Image (cartoon, rainbow, N blue to C red; front, side, top):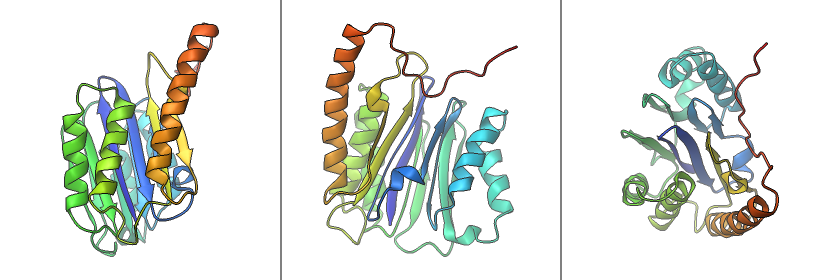
Length: 223
């Protein structure tokens, strides 16, 4: 039902996801100062919430997700993947996830999907992310999402119904780093359009209001 990518590059972490269902951005992708996680298939949103919380307290993404899945009696129905700032990855595709379902991990990212048209979706996402290596992380994630959609995406097609993009950037957070399309006949294309509009508006805002602070993941307060 879903295809997604989590990535960590040069201290920036992000996720992009699309599905043939409504409002995937509200339930599935999670990003924090320490990495990114997606929970999908038979989605369990608390896995994303608790995994990023554990990562913030020092756990690796593998430690965090593996512990949560070990305590989940329905883990065979879950698909979870992610990466942390140290480059450690985790991928889990439960045996009860509907075909085609699979995942893959690389040095800078993980990809996963279920109810896909075939393995070419994940291969295309990985190739597109690597090919866009000279671009900012948000645009690399969108390139991967576009490649997955064009390779067949969700087998219920013809297009994803919702899509989302979220990025943690420690130095230059931007408005286009947190975007959702909750329901649309062509959600990936609409997410690309909204991203371009937000990038233009964000640049204008930064020029006009230099004291804006758009950091969604500020460091913890100290006493």
